[in-house]
Structure formats: C-alpha cells, structure tokens
Image (cartoon, rainbow, N blue to C red):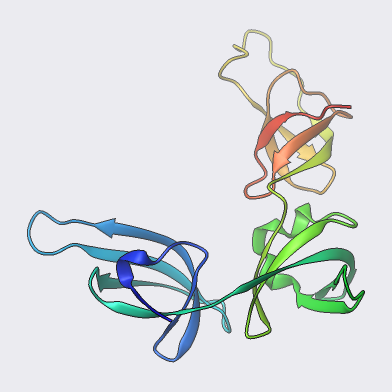
Length: 188
C-alpha cells in the first residue's frame, strides 16, 4: 500500500530498495529555506542493520501491512525463544535477536504481541511494565536529598537500574520493559 512519506510512523514496516525495513524513529524537519523533509531511522528486518533515510514529504513509500498476534512465552531453547499460540497451542520459534534489549524482561507465561508480515515475525512487543525483585541495592548515603537522588540496584533478571533511596534489597518493584527504569513499588 503506497503512502506519503510524511505518514511514516515508528513501528510501521516499509519496503525500500527491495528490502523490508522496520521504522524505529521518524522526524519531520522544516529547514529555514526549502521544502520540509522526513528523516527516518529504520532497521533491515533480515540483517538487523540500521540506516537513516530522508524523503521529501510529498514522496511516496510502500507500506507493508502487518498483523499483530498474541502468543504466550513458554521457554528458552538455545538461541531461540519458544512461544505458544493460545488458540491452537502450536509452538512458534523466534530467534533471541528479535527481542533486543527486552529479552531479560521475558517471564514465564507472559503474553507477548508478535508483529507478522506475510507470516514472518518482524518485531515483538512485551507488556509495558513487569514486576521484579531487587536482589541488591546500595545503602543510602546520609545527607542525600530524597527528591533528586537515585541509587543503583540489581534486579532478579540481572538488569541494573536506578531506584529511589527507600527501596531495599528483597523488595518487589515495577519497571518499564522498554528501558528497565523504575516506576513504583509493587503492590502486594
């Protein structure tokens, strides 16, 4: 499906120069002189290479239609992640690379959304937040102000994050799967 370049949004998949690209970021730039253009950061779905491309806002690009399908995480199998289709109970293998930085946040029986294009997986979306236990937290330094100071902590999945001074080891906290940042204490 053809669309104008200024309609490109993050998360879309487009075809450019005979290859499929996942759009990571887009920005419309209006210079002081001349016409506006769109700067797009995108990743090649086959090789994983990133590139930046510019189009005039009136240019057209080929957008590929994607289907989002929900799967349940089952287990890890070497370099692959095994997901299960909750409707048919079929197993679906995905390479770990498709999860990128979100892989450590994958938990047993977690529901994930896999974006498919013509049956090929192109991206995976985890829930926005997960609850994890703090296994290690530095002690509070006396005299620090509570409003602006955060301290480093290690989570049960091996990810380091910054937490408020009142969070201690052994507590459960909610973090964003996007970047591992602290959201709040977990409610019991």
